[in-house]
Image 1: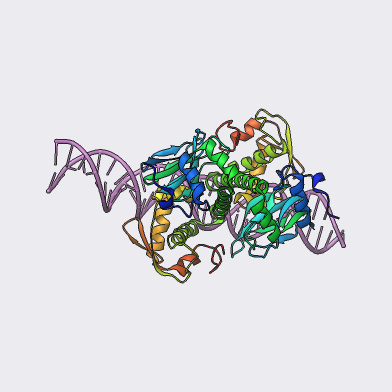
Image 2 (image 1 turned 180 degrees about the vertical axis):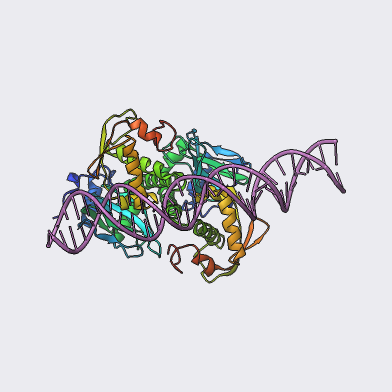
Length: 240
Length: 240
DNA sequence: CGATTGTTTGAATGAGTTCAACGTACGTGG
DNA sequence: CCACGTACGTTGAACTCATTCAAACAATCG
């Protein structure tokens, strides 16, 4: 029932990306799939997490909640992203499936010992963790110093960057993206209220910087124009 | 001239913490020390960084600047923290010495190949990177969802946590801390203006939650009272 | 000394929140 | 097929917290 690693859609991007076929065989033995429906909680902060996992398909969010209910999203988990922390038995964050999600789960103990013995896994995990750290820091800049309008523009351009995966065609025109999040989730991500998100999106639309079809489909007629609104310096392509 | 690794003050906390004596010898060959004076910039975002390094002594900040001059601090670099990213030739951030700083620098290329061949280094670097990621995410919560007063209270309690290094004596009384940062640097850290920082500190003082002697020395008569002001749930000790 | 750097405090302004109403799409059951 | 409920989104108006602009204070250093 478990699909073959060799045919896995995230074979070359997930934590196993650098593994050879022999190592994949070892992984096959400690892995199992698990699925969650949109809206389901995969783990609450503090819960025990008996597995570590790769997101195979779907989108999940990583977040945290203050006592009085204020929430902040700390990361988006997209296909190939890694869930959990080796060496820590409980989740430090709330993990929630936004769409239907399939995880490729590794039992914790065996995965941890494999991690110790298999450089290919450790190397890849290090790369991925450093990427996450860069993303978290980019987000700190957005949360700490940007205006609501800049936050929205930044979020849209990050989605665009990701959708047209790869370095940025800064002179791109007519880029289309589908927002994977509700207004509320965007607000939680950007440290805003959902009303402010809605207003700023409306404003960008009114000014022709984006076009909306329905509520989730955005067209960006002129990427450079959107990038100007992010507050980042003019044309600098993020992350060489 | 290069000090012996075996006598290094950060021997058991830095990236080399898990190395055996043979590996240390290898490191000795590619390392050199470099010092910076308080206020000096170690690297600007975008600069080429020909080395990777450990902070041996002193405090530095990791920050980023928007075109119009707004700055956000993204991390504090304390002794044993790692500077730079293997595989990336340029610094993604501004790195500034806050006090006099000594770095133990490794030439990039040889360090990177050692990293590939020495599991002890990769493992430790992974741990440290995951810790940084947790810290970055804690800040995201602070930046995105906390009020000015909560931000200040959080910063003070983080300093207190660090000063009384180790898990938290939540019932501590009369804890004294010395602020390692100016009001402006705190503002850059918390995503506030320096005026707001000053006002909130004054307010906490007025209400007896903290006592000030001079501008840098803070006494916290009742830690629990300060923790209540952070907005985090009552007494939860962060990070087991 | 004045100059500089860091800090405090005040008053006015404004960006974003809060509270509230309304709109729109979709699914379910009568 | 339409009425109704629910979830998501938009818009308006009042309010508020933090910022901005401004002035003054304190400590340190040539």
